[in-house]
Length: 143
Image 1 (cartoon, rainbow, N blue to C red):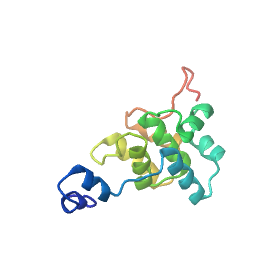
Image 2: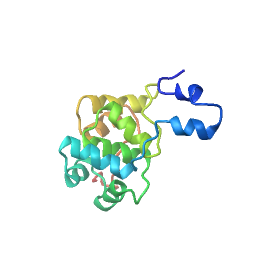
Image 3: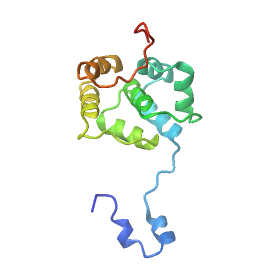
Image 4: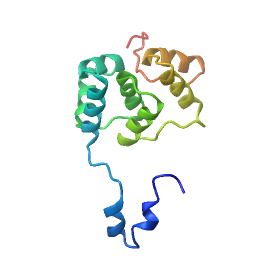
């Protein structure tokens, strides 16, 4: 059985009993982001700028008032300077699938995260492998 699920067998037979023993996270998505930024000494405006997200939309994601797509959450992970594990946690907390090592696009993204590249550098790599980029660009190629 996958690590962390042992309580499901040892807590009891009824769901109510099992839920009492489940290591449920009580923090909201926005609280988790704030805690991660504080732990890294990041200010929200730095995260937003580095993520290359629309400023208003980024703040709404961070405050938990807007749901974000997987790609926008990945951009936020780049803005926060998260590693692969932190990015996977952000994705899952944001309601998206974690990065998958069996997916070429996700491997390219994970490589960029691991190497400390920025979101635009990651986009260049994605483009070079024929994969969809993260940052939305206009018809003239501008962000």
